[in-house]
Image (cartoon, rainbow, N blue to C red; front, side, top):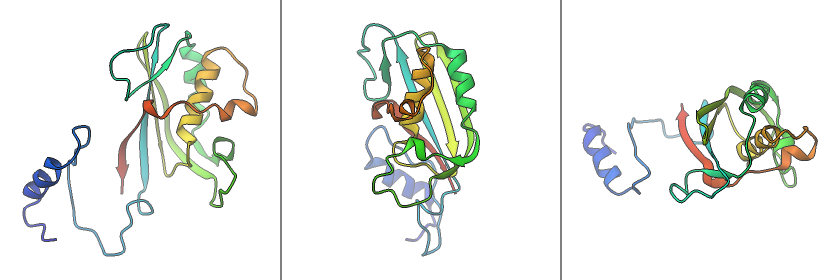
Length: 168
């Protein structure tokens, strides 16, 4: 593809995408480039809506938790995921053959309001369901429950999860 006019190409591509997806830049890459394997980091955001009554708006972009959550306990536990370590507790190992070691650069719980917490995580790679299980464990801790082997298997629903950024 000739990329002499990237703005025109961006406009053309974006006109055919769903409303909740947009390309902000494009650049030419080598023939052997692989979008998954050449990424240096990925960043996810998980939104948690906290209220006894279910939400009626944005159901596709947040997860609902009925119980009050201890923000400080969750925030402290979120920090424990930083660094390079084995995340095999947060993946279904059945049929899983690749390495379970990941390097987490950012792991932060953000209190947007008393009704909404956001969890931001950035890592060199992620395992299948890893973020949803980490958030499940954070919610478990936020409910005042102790950590256990089972707490890493409490996957939150996909609706709260958004891929925010991929860096190459």
